[in-house]
Amino acid sequence: MKHVLVTGGAGYIGSHACKALRAAGYVPVTFDNLETGWRDAVKFGPFVQGDLLDRAALDAAFARYNPVAVMHFAALSQVGESMQDPGRYWRNNVLGSLTLVEAAVAAGCLDFVFSSTCATYGDQDNVVLDEDSAQHPINAYGASKRAIEDILRDFEAAHGLRHVIFRYFNVAGADPDGEVGEFHQPETHLVPLMLDAIAGKRDALTVYGTDYDTPDGTCIRDYVHVCDLVDAHVLGLNWLENGKGSRVFNLGTGSGFSVREVIDHSRAVTNRAVPYVDGERRPGDCTKLVSGSTRAETELGWTPTRSTLETMITDAWRWHQTGHYDT
Ligand SMILES: NC(=O)c1ccc[n+]([C@@H]2O[C@H](COP(=O)([O-])OP(=O)(O)OC[C@H]3O[C@@H](n4cnc5c(N)ncnc54)[C@H](O)[C@@H]3O)[C@@H](O)[C@H]2O)c1
Image (cartoon, rainbow, N blue to C red; front, side):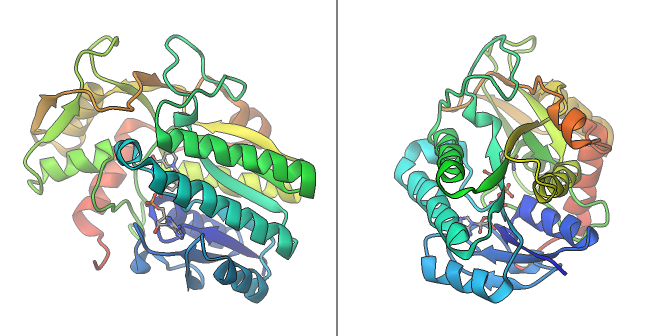
């Protein structure tokens, strides 16, 4: 069976990707330092505990498993933290990815799938965000991801590194089988924060900013179910294996929901009150991020099936109530 090196495979999205890869007939090899991930989330293939900045550990993993491709999820990804400590983000995300890319090229592993983000586009009011839109990130996290995209392009030109870049919008939901799910400590994502508040595990959800230029004043985001998202990654891997060459794809549904709308849907799905308070804007947050592209559907044949707010919140709520990792 073909092995795929999955960096960040112990994290939220990477663990779901490992499940999808396994179902598609690959052996996912998780390479993760467990900085924000969980050993318990590695269920579908071997585990290598290692850091992206450790070239020797990467070389050993490539030598041992001889992967046909890399899926690179490992990163620090909190916008607010990236504004307070940008050096940590540039070192971990950019230097770490550079080390990984150099190790992959040295090992002759030239198919590479990368987790980028809509945060690379920045705050562009009234602009339809497609893959050709200008990238003007307004936080260090987004800037670090844009820099990695540049690294991939340079390594393709110099060393033939074929890559698929996925720019995710907001990822939510959980594996409907309950084997893996979202668990960050600290949590910064809207849906799990809200479910914690509903379940009484935190006082109240803070709505960061109610004076944005949107119909109800709260930020608007495009939500995609984690299972749909990782299905696109398997299609992206097949795309590279079929020799179709490097390509960038947005992964979003094209529908935007405000924070208040997500609160309303959560109230309806859980049939419980959502305790929340209105707060100040957070530095680095964009007003509206919604995908304006259907390239993933038309070119990759991606068909999201679970990316309605109802299904995402239902799946996340089920995981919230029954799933957990040992901490
Ligand atoms: N969750 C979202 O909504 C979202 C949106 C856009 C992009 N992304 C991107 O998707 C990827 C996965 O996000 P996630 O939500 O699953 O995050 P996560 O924090 O759950 O997972 C990241 C994993 O990477 C590991 N890691 C981090 N730095 C590492 C290093 N130097 N060496 C080895 N392992 C390291 C962590 O331990 C963790 O297991 C990230 O690259 C993130 O930027 C996520």
